[in-house]
Length: 70
Image 1 (cartoon, rainbow, N blue to C red):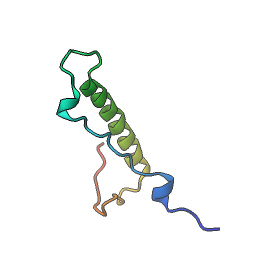
Image 2: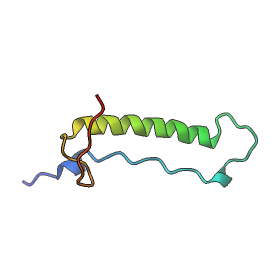
Image 3: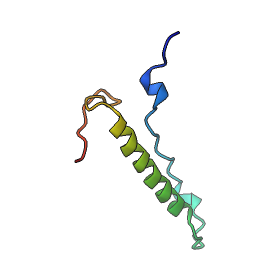
Image 4: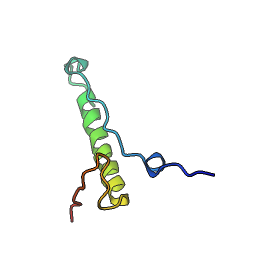
């Protein structure tokens, strides 16, 4: 039995799509679509930090090495 590549088992998180500027109705909604996107970006950044912590130091998805923040 063959094993799936590591990337398939633990894929890099993908950022949420940014809403179009026209998506906001301008009526002061709470939450606004941009507020929801900001919250989604916060979750994405947390997931990305956790994903990077699980990766080897020298393995970046694009082949470059990255440096972990202390």
